Amino acid sequence: MPDQKILASLNHQFGIEGQLQFRTVGGLIMAEITSEHAQATIALQGAQVLSWVPNGQQPVIWLSDDATFTPGKSIRGGIPVCWPWFGAHPERDDYPAHGFVRAADWEVIETSVLGAGQTKIVFRLLQQKENAAFWPHNTELELQVIVGSTLELNLITRNNSSEAITISQALHSYFAVNDISQVAIKGLEDCQFIDALDDWQRKVETDSIRIDAEIDRIYQNTKPTCVLEDTGWQRCINIETINSQSTVVWNPWIDKSVRLGDMGEGGYLNMLCIETGNIADDRVSIAAGREHCLSVCYRVEGI
Ligand code: TA6
Image (cartoon, rainbow, N blue to C red; front, side, top):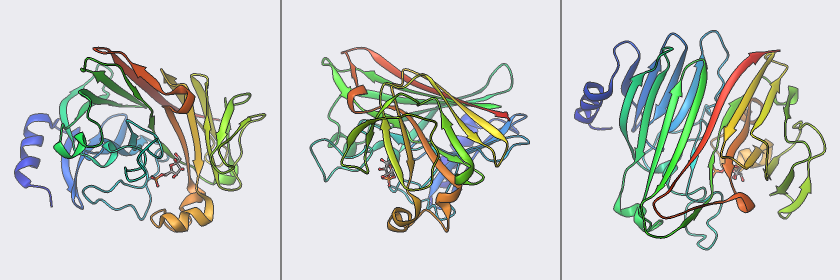
């Protein structure tokens, strides 16, 4: 159980009357946002958005019914931050998949209400000894989250070292869908992709994407926008990105869901990951003293 004193000081320093408060769920501290625009929940561990529900809408972000909230264990669903490597570590197979920051502690450094009533909260990765083993570089990692009728995330990597660094990264978003058989992804046509289910072979997308089996693809050199069309809920989720060249599409379907063990009964039928990042050919090199900002904005509209 998180320390109540920490909770009290978080609420004192960063709480916003009637709009943002901190509480514990399981073994973790959450920021709970309720505003004129939307509701959202964000775990301090991993600075992981767990839910975003624009008022009057169905949930946009999916969280597994079997998700656990255990310190040091990544949470199934929401928007995990994959950094400074995506997938398996290039050299060390004993290092955690998708980097170490999604299960690490972050601190809150700022909260505010913006002009149109959106709620802004800014997290910074805590510099912890155990992390240095994975990543010996002098960098700073910050995530800005702006919650309103849209949801905006800005992942900022600052290279405070005297050498260039190279990272791969993703905002590993799990979207909630009414029925996986009634969705389509548009905007990745003609893009090359790496098929993680077919020996990492490179192929080219020829059409909008429909899901009727396990899918795990890393699209390269993608356009700044794509759309998740959900005819079941009669809505489109517009995904608008800045400084992102890669898009990952993932659904574990039946067998992989069983192997993962925390997807929940039939969870794969109501979620689809469309991840915004820079991976493989699109990995990012950041010069000494410079920074890189990966941004995404989700906007829902009816169809
Ligand atoms: O983003 C797709 C992917 O890399 C898949 O290969 C699958 O493993 C998924 O991420 C989930 O990874 P996790 O480590 O959270 O189980």
